[in-house]
Image 1: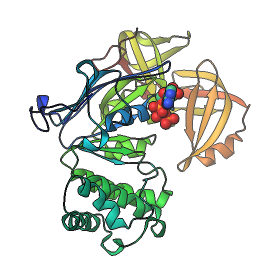
Image 2: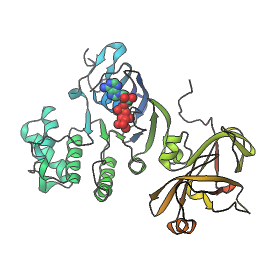
Image 3: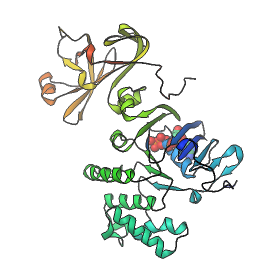
Length: 376
Ligand SMILES: Nc1ncnc2c1ncn2[C@@H]1O[C@H](COP(=O)(O)OP(=O)(O)OP(=O)(O)O)[C@@H](O)[C@H]1O
């Protein structure tokens, strides 16, 4: 198989997209089937639980594994199209990659690590090093050009990796869990710097992450995959407000249920009924935040319209609060203050009453016009 003979830039990018791909990859019994387009300057976060296919997608884009089907075009150049026997080797793709553990060459200085890509693109040693020095200065490492990776901190190594990826002026920048190896403090600073550099990148960026904060801070759009398929995609506000699967709900921290609405009542698929503030009819999702769930030692009287007995299955710290996991007619997460937890003397196995006001629930149609995988 060969690269597209029409060469780089031969066709205009369709509809203003830099990346126009439909990634189909079979790995044993697993199939990735991921349509993916990214516009110039856009940052898309690819999220999903373990085994969803994120790494497979990244490797397919980088040319490390071939597509089984579909196609991949970048900046108007057909890189991969098994139906037409087109395939392009990694080094001929206009792609920069920041790997999770950076994969810097240990025997090369920061400067030569960054100059490596431009050199392979055909720049003279002098020009490649000039470009590398410019990029290292941009990421704040002008003083560290002659350091070997073992003498760099985690945050500095991450910035060398970013400079190395951007120095090839890629049409597509791939970031694989770029902040995962950093401690919390360094992660905060590095995330802010990364945001700055991504804003200046005119190509497409795909960020693979497990961390919803990285996604929310860095991405313009989220694409969420489970078991190789897109289950939801959209801008951060839409996905956060209207999660459509348990994974997405957990990711954005909401309690989410599916059911059938008849006015202010929603009968959930397991038979439990919730009273909601909004009126709806037909298939719906009901969501409420863990902070909307109140816990009481006895059945509460008065305003909350939804109450049920619930048994504590787990308690974790969650920011300044505690997140309490509860089992019962529905499983639910509740956020409460340490003071309230002490007052209630919360312990795993304890049964108490959970309450949610109807006005705290959000209801939205199950068949919303989002790009959601059709059920088979
Ligand atoms: N070399 C391989 N051969 C066969 N199957 C594989 C291979 N590598 C991965 N898989 C399978 O492909 C599926 C997707 O794996 P992948 O690593 O892409 O998921 P992921 O979303 O990146 O997961 P994680 O978040 O755990 O890294 C999994 O079911 C995995 O078992």
